[in-house]
Length: 390
Image 1 (cartoon, one colour):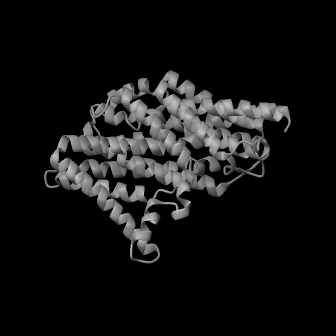
Image 2: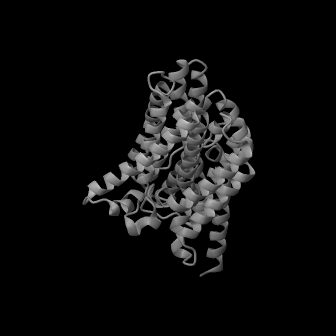
Image 3: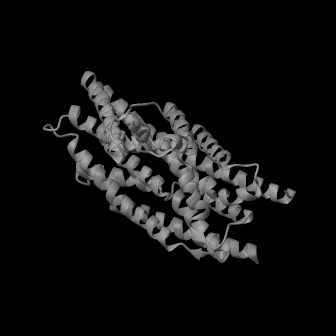
C-alpha cells in the first residue's frame, strides 16, 4: 500500500472522528435525555454519561445500514475518492460546528446528505432517484407522523377515563414489540432479532412463531411497567421515561454514526487492514466522547426548554421519536433528530395547550434552516469538489 494512500485515509479518519464528536456534542447527543432532565427524572451529568454509552452501543450494533447508504447509496457511477471524503466530512462537521456555536438549527442529516450528493455530482456521478424519493418521503412525513403520534399520546395520558396504570403499559408493550424486532448483525445466527430467537421456543411454525414471540415480549414489557406504576406511579413514570431516553439515545447512535463514518466505507477496499467494524467502533467512540465532553451544556440548555413538558408529555415526545428513528435505520435513510424531536414536541404541545406558546415564526425559521442546510451543503460540496478537480 502506498504511503500517500495511508496518509490520506488517516486524514479522512480524523475528519470522521471530528464529525462523530460534533454529532455527540450536538443535538443528537443532547435530545434523547433532555426531556427527562427537564422533567427532573435524571441529572444533567448522568444523562450525558448514559447518552454516550447508549449512543456508542447503537453505533456499533446498528450503524451499518445508514453508513452503507451514505457511503455508496446516494450517487451511482462513481466511488468517492479519499479527498472527496475529506471534503464531505469537513463540510458537514464545519457546518454543524457553526450551528452549535451560533445556535442555528443546522441538521446533520441534511448537511451530510447534501454534501455527499453535491460532491458526487461534481465527480460525474448520476442520481439515485429511487433512494432520493425514499429519503424525501421520510423527511417530509416525519413532522406529520411524529407530530400526529405525539398528539395522540399526549391527548390520552391526562384523561381521567384512561388511567395511566393502563395507558402507559400499553405504550410499553408497543415499544417492547418494536425492540423485539430490531435487527442486529450479531444475532444473525438466530434470525437477526430477539423475536426471531425467541420464536424457537414457541410451538408454532413460520412467521407465526415470530409474531407470537414478539407479542409475548411486548406483554412482558407491559406487565413490568404496569407493576412498577402500580406500586409507585410517579417513580414508574420516571423510570419508563428514562427507558425511552435510553432507546432514543441508542437509536440516535445507530442512525447518526452513518453520517460520520459512511463516507469512509468506499475507501475500505484500498485499506484492507481496516474493517467496517473498526470504523463503526471509531465512530461510536467519537460520539461517546462528544456526548461526555460537550453534550452536558446542550442538555442543560434544551432541558430548560423541555421543563414545561413534564413526564407525560415527555413520554409522548420520545415514543414517536424512537419509532421514527428505528424506521429510518431499517430503511437505511439518514434522518435529522432535530426534525424528529421538534415535530414530536409540537404535536404534544397542540394536544396539551392547543398550540399556545408555539411560535409559527420560529417553526418556519427552523424549517427554512433545515432546507437551507441541505442546499448550502450541496452547493459547497459541488463547488469545492469542482475546484479540487480543476
